[in-house]
Length: 411
Image (cartoon, rainbow, N blue to C red; front, side):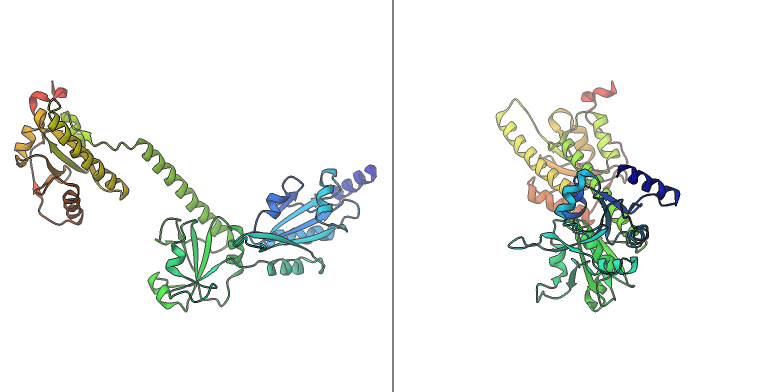
């Protein structure tokens, strides 16, 4: 038997057939990867179980055609039941003839497993031609695409647009379409990205939503980050490869942003920086953009001063945290007027009643002093006015300085 198999394989090579049921889009399956590639995913699978003896070269070509034509819509695999390690798999999958084609398709799980997908199996009994195999397999591609409406949800079959976006578990992909039925490609993508991405579609008849999203042509596709309600327009080729490449690019950007945010979080120091040198002062004022400066009177030898200072620093820490959350433009620092802030106070005409909060923009050579109380609510209101461009700003033409006698880096 081994000799016959060797001769058969040699004949395949001689007559131009590279291998049985193998190709760029055909996955060789075995006991180790069968669950991962077939059972544990929501996509439709067409799997050929075969033995070398009695091989069907014509079917090999048909299956290869199916795998190439439906790439991205279904997954095609093959199992060589002649290999000893695969014998138990072929028995489990109830293979009774060779070659045998099994189609695995998603179906709702039984019992209380709401939202879970299981795979069902059926033996394909139709004509063993690419056309018929493809038609049969694509009919098994169910839709997990949510129909989205602008009004209130009436049945479980449709979901309100805002409610759809409020599902923050996964990113989302929305198709705006003028087709009466969900396109096959989008149905296939809903299975391919099951548990990774939520897909929805908005019909052209939802005119308010279409206008809200400024859709001018069909189809139009939008992508939403998991935590965002801001649509990102897809502008690539509207085929499987184009959409998948776009999704992968967005996933990459999301991952990079998350890593960057994590790194920044690790480096984040909640304490506002104390300005002690001229270099520190000019770095904040001229190098950062908007320097939020608190002029404090801190005397560590006096208990009452220490207590007041701690309260003031706590206010600044809270303001700094709020600034971080919104990605604000301010860098929070403080100057001890007792040690080296007298000249700075005089030059900027800061009130004698400390503490005082102010901002300085060195690039525009403007500043503004908060004349309100040094409390979190009042300062927050002041900063809101600054961000909105409300209120009067003053210009200055001098170089801000600390008290000369205490500036170490100028000696």
